Amino acid sequence: MKDYDNDKTWKFLTTAKNIAVVGISDKPDRDSYRVSRYLKENGYEIFPVNPSLTEWEGIKAYPSLMDIPKENKIDIVDIFRKPDTVIPIVNDAAKIGARIIWFQEGVVNETAAENARKYGMNVVMDRCMMKEHYRHKH
Image 1 (cartoon, rainbow, N blue to C red):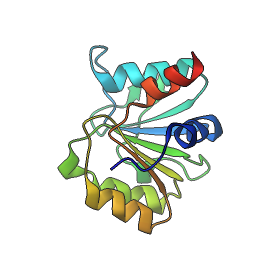
Image 2 (spheres, one colour):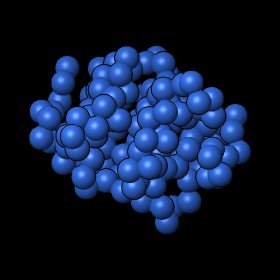
Image 3 (cartoon, helix red, strand yellow):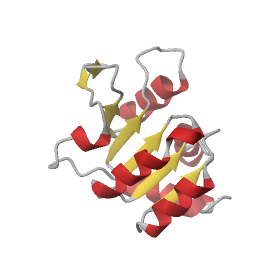
């Protein structure tokens, strides 16, 4: 299910500043690495979330969303995880006050999306943040 049209998706991207990327990789051939690097190069503050990393591109990485210091207001939680693992991530995103849950391409979990909506978050599912940003900019 597509929650938002292109204009609303673009509004999310233009009003967001801080993006927590759950499932980020330090391997340059991975989508999560490429998308995060693109977002960083386009002015977003990236908060890497991966329990296997201590840093990503020189930025401190966090084991979970709950470990990001509270003074960093997260606008979007961008999820690069298998669909059957995302419900706890959505729950943590609600606890830290994220406004938007973004399930990357291939990440589809209707239950998690419904939970996010119940928490009052906006949901974008099965869309690539980098592709959406690039398409609207060019």
